[in-house]
Image 1 (cartoon, one colour):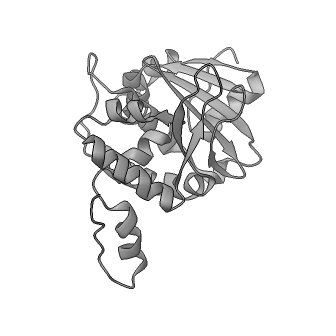
Image 2 (cartoon, rainbow, N blue to C red):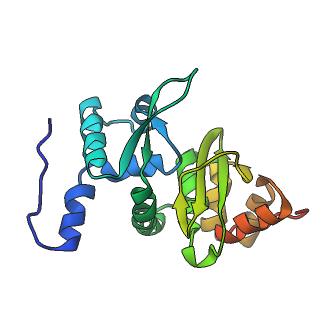
Amino acid sequence: MAVRRTYDQNCPIAMGLDLLGERWTLLILRELLGGARRYSDLRADLPGIATNLLADRLRELEEAGLVERAELPAPAARTVYRLSDRAWREIPPILQAIAWFGLGQLPSPTDGDDVPPLTGFLAGILMAFDPGRVGSVDATYQAVVDGRTFDFAVRDGHLAEARGHPDVRLVASAADLVALRLATKPSARHRAATRLDLSGTGRAVARFCATFALPAPTGH
């Protein structure tokens, strides 16, 4: 078992880093923003992490009340890890702030770029979430980015765990989602916007687009 390091300072930043500052911790939480994940999923999506280190980090996050285990019903009958309600309230703003800083380090996308699905999901959707635009939204959403599915919701003014059938489903490429935020030419942003595929009632789609600062599709 790894030995937990501490800054041993009576400071909120230091205490926050005692938990979140360890290598891989924030990336594990990042993965769980897209919904519950199996241990094997986390291993596959975090190349380079040792299996014992992943187990240690998950245990630490469980002990801190940020991650929970759940059993999928039959026929899956498998253990998954998911964010706790506390984590959904407190972790997304932290990841958003770091992601906005890191986004400035990414090169402007060009056609043919290989953009990971998770990068598209974060840059195109979650990073744009602003509690000030939420109002009374209470809805579950699904984003399918280059074939990878992300399930999430908005409840009580913050991001939350998905529950039930999605009110809106978005299908898009990661490259288009990043282009919506980073492309320097309006024509490139417009082309990316026209390729978004949104399904749901007109009202639900309009609220989804307003909540995540996405262009409303024509025809809705």
